[in-house]
Image (tube, rainbow, N blue to C red; front, top):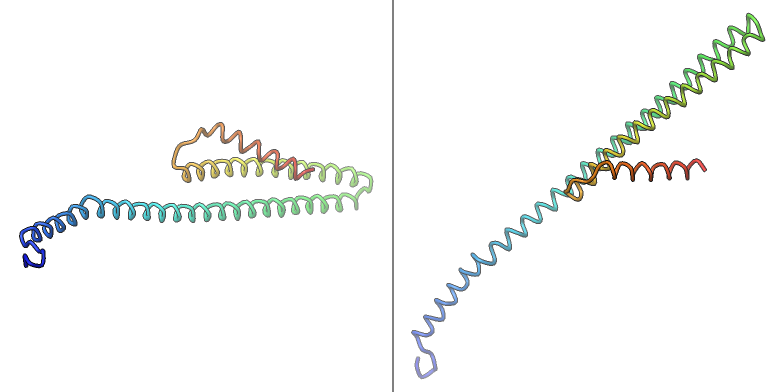
Length: 166
């Protein structure tokens, strides 16, 4: 073997060193890196799951809002219908008196509808602001100044409403 340039003791030392190096690298580098990668993958899965949950919550909130708006619309129609019925009965008794009472009832009904619509929109806005802040806190994983963000979100919503009304 010496004639071929192999030195058995050196070869054994190199082999042992190589095996020791592989073991050290596995313990020191490979395992911690794999653990970190697994941890990041789990974090990514958790974030996606949380995002899906938030989407579902937003969808449910949207459905609730649609339900509230529809209920308000139906209630408004019922109120207007009741006002019309009252107006017709009174009109049969005295035409002039019925006209005056019907106008007063319709005005009250519209005022009530507007007031209820404004209240439901304010409630919706508050819930939307809270959900938005909660979503932002979860997404960036740190607590935000709720008062500043609420003010900013309400300002953006007011600008959106103003643009929509124009």
